Length: 224
Length: 224
DNA sequence: GGGACTTCCTGAAAACTGCCTGAACCAGCC
DNA sequence: GGCTGGTTCAGGCAGTTTTCAGGAAGTCCC
Image 1: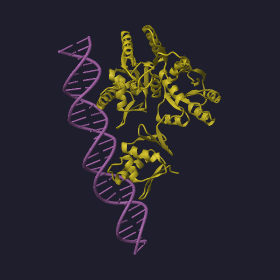
Image 2: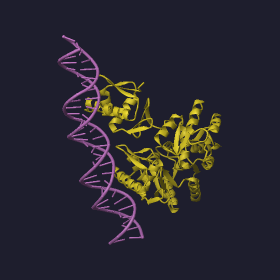
Image 3: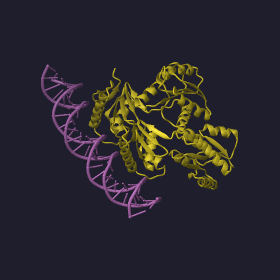
Image 4: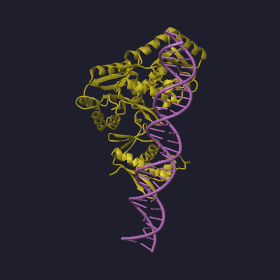
C-alpha cells in the first residue's frame, strides 16, 4: 500500500508518515498543491491523503484537478473546519472521504482501511436536485450556504420529491408514502406541507420549484 | 483498560479473563460472533481479543465487520492454526495482531502491551471541536481558560459527541456506546445528560452547541 | 366574457408530542 | 452522616401536525 501524503505542516506530515509506516504503508510526502498534482497524476498511489489548506493550490482544487485528469485514486481530505458547506465542497470536488482535524491514529487507519476496501461507497447521505440538497441524516435543506431545518413530515415529503425529480406525484402517493398506506390524512394535509416546503425553499433562496399540476399532483423541477 | 474477550471455549475464556484481571484489566466475555459484533460496536473497549473459531460468525468475519462499521479498537486474533494463509487473512480482515494457541500468559500480556503502546504512543490525549477541548485523561472540559470537571457518564457522552462533530447521533446510539449495548437506559437518561452537558458547556463559555434534531437525535456543532 | 363550479393555497388556531430540566431519590464512598 | 454521581419523575414548554375557513386560481360551459 503506497500512500501520498500532502500536508504543509511539517510536524503533522511527519507524524502521518510515521503512523502509516508503522502500520505497513509506504509513503511519499509533498508540501504544496502543485507538487500534489504532479505526484498524484503518476497514478502509482493507492491512496492520497490531502490537506485542505495548502500553499499554491488548495485541497479541493487539487482533488478536482486530479479527477479531471481521470485519476481515480481514493482521496482522503483533511480539514480543520467541519462546516457542512465544506463537506459538500469536499465531496463535490471528487474526494472519497473526509476527516476533520484533530484525529487519532486509530481513526486515520480506520478511514484508510475503509477507503481501500469499499471504493465508491457514498460518504454523505444526501439527495440533491438543482441547487437544493437534502441532508438525509440531519433533515436539513440546503442551498448554497443557507440551511434550514425540516420537520419530520416536511422531510418525508421533501425526500419523496427530491427522490424522483421531474416526476409527477399524486397526493395519494404522497400520503401513502409520507403518512403510511393505512393513513387517513386528507389532501389538505399534503397541500399544507407543500406550502410549508415552498416557503422553506424560498427561504434558502433555491431556484427549484414545486409545480402544481391541477387535479393530478405535484412535481419538483430544478427551475430553469 | 477494558478488554472484550470473544472465545467460545468456556475454560479458555475464563482463563483469559483471569489472567487479564490479575493484571489490572477489566473484561467482558462473549461466546459467539454475533455477540462479539454487538459488543464490539459499542466502541467502549480498548482491545478486543478474538478467537478465530466461533459459532455464528468466525473471527475474520467479525473483525472485518467491525472495521466496516468504523470501529478501530485494536483486535488481537487467536487461532490454533498457524498457517501463513491464516495470518494473511487475519491482517486483511483488519486485525492488528495475531497470536497462535497455545500461548503463555506472559506472551499474551506482551502482545497486549504492544497493541496498546502502538496506540498510546501517538493517540492525542484530547478531543477538540471549535473552542471546546475535552481532556481524555482528566475528563475536564475546557474552553479558553475556563475548565470544568465532567462525571463519568457526562464524559462518555461528551466523548462520543466530540468524536464525530457534525454527525447526528441517535439516542439509541448514545445509549449503546455510553451505557453499553445490553443496557436498559431510557431515552430520558440521554436527555438528562445532554442537559447537564449543555449547562457545563455554557459554564465554560463555549460557542459550541448541542443541537436537538427532533425525533432523530443530537448533533454537536462549533456554533459559527 | 361571465357565472358556476372545482381545486388549490395559506394564515391562524387547536391539538398533540417530544423534549427539557428542576427536584427528588438511590447507591456507593469517604 | 455528608458527598458525589447516577437515575427517575413530572410539569411545563416549544415545535409539529392537524384542522378549519376564506379567498385565489383554474376550468368548464353557456
